[in-house]
Amino acid sequence: MIRIFFLVLMLITNMTIIAQEAGVQPGDPAFVAKYAGLDFKGKFALAIEQTPSNNYFLVDFSILPVRFERVYFINLTFSSDKLINIDPDISKDRVCFMANSKYSETDILEIFEDLKKKVDEKSASWSENMKAEWLQRNDKYK
Image (cartoon, rainbow, N blue to C red; front, side, top):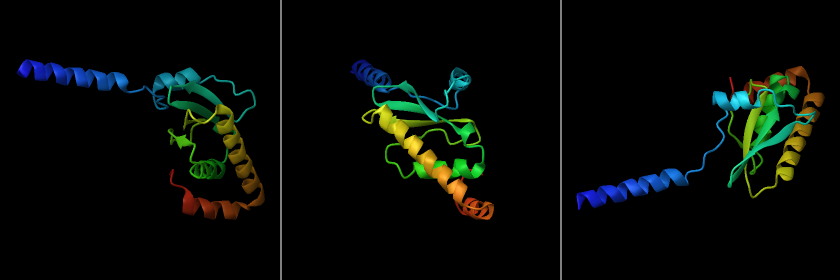
């Protein structure tokens, strides 16, 4: 009886492990190396990987060289119910996001472009003092 119970327990554990979907790990050195030389070809974001349930995107943060722009962009992404930031290190030049595969890649890439446009508009219209004050209140990435 104990052997059968142990066998069933092992079978359930194996099925659980197999059923879990491997995802992108932006902090993994293999992931960093894989996309270190990626050419964005002038685009702000690219779709990089897919799993059955999620699509993964890489955003070129080198286009947002100022801390205000990066923090403002990340804060804007929280307003989208389609984007999930899985890479909280905004000091890097490439930041990874995830979206459910039920949303098309085109829609997600358009969201990134729209958010970047909002960042550009805000950055151009605010003074350096306004940006500094905003950062003091909203920069959670210190």
